Length: 173
Image 1 (cartoon, helix red, strand yellow):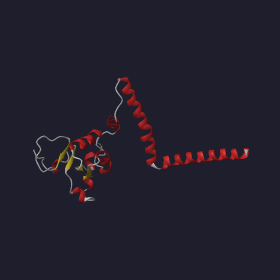
Image 2: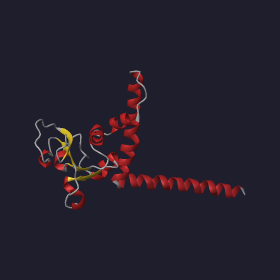
Image 3: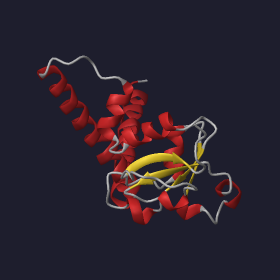
Image 4: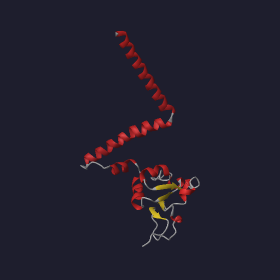
């Protein structure tokens, strides 16, 4: 009986060491694991601690979900603009990667990423227009980013903003 407990303990230790080595190997060999540990684990923890310190030092109330997301996701307020400026059945044309690359709207060209935040609205990236022509033909709104997108509107605009969300057809007054 005593021997069995000893072997059980040894076996658990060996399994734990092997698991630790396997996870370490994944961390070094697969960039996605490294990103998950560094970005999601450590960076998020540091960000949460900084936000909480600032909140306590300035005697602010706890943040709601939208305020927390705004700290983490650089273009979050623009995603909220997409929600508030379009009806739920809208299909939004997103700018190409060349327009958003290196800006605070880095991922606004990715329809899969944006769709998570704007559901039930649909979206399609300009770069994806040939992959999904059926959805592209149903576009009702254009996401204006860095001045891109005004050429798709079927009406003139007097004051062109850097960021906006506008319907393709002129709104009925």
